[in-house]
Length: 267
Image 1 (spheres, rainbow, N blue to C red):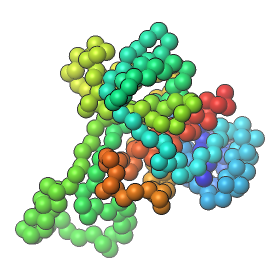
Image 2 (image 1 turned 135 degrees about the vertical axis):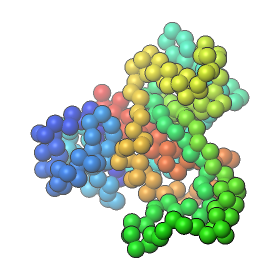
Image 3 (image 1 turned 30 degrees about the horizontal axis):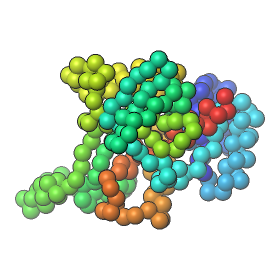
């Protein structure tokens, strides 16, 4: 279970003092985990009761605490569905999916998570590099090592692209705007830069729906904790899945979406 603080955490010295008093953690560690303006993990606990009790104590201190199950990050029921285009109406948007269109009122949108998706992994790449300097060696590869590296890069299936995930209040599936394939021209964009078009669209949606845009995937403590959860045991092997998934952004987006859903419900 992830005990998290919402972006409304003000980051004042008094707030960190109260946070330290409840958790028993030092302020330095807390400042690296939790920052104002973004979601952060105070603690990851295996026992749900302990996590709920800690969350209740933080709330009693006036801190915006929420408890989110860690396995949300790899929940197969929280499917990420690509959308090809959308239309804006006076009170909502119309999503164009692969086989249907779906009208969504602005009030159903809970948040937008903006980031970069990395699909695939270079073969042989270590997820968690060693922190010991004794394993380091001079970067003077031999010709055979260079050849192995070139072959591994050529055989890897890896690509990155800008994306924005639309999360909703009442459903768990996620609508993804993939900047590579989304029809920005339908919204009058000039298509000079798909990344710029995506950011303009995200800002417009956030303003019209009055929701928060989360851009914290590069700095939030949620990333490492959500990643550590790993895929569920009953998940099919990667080779049998319909599409490759991102091991970093996808879990982060799901966790943030659930946390924002809880935040909206509390208000």
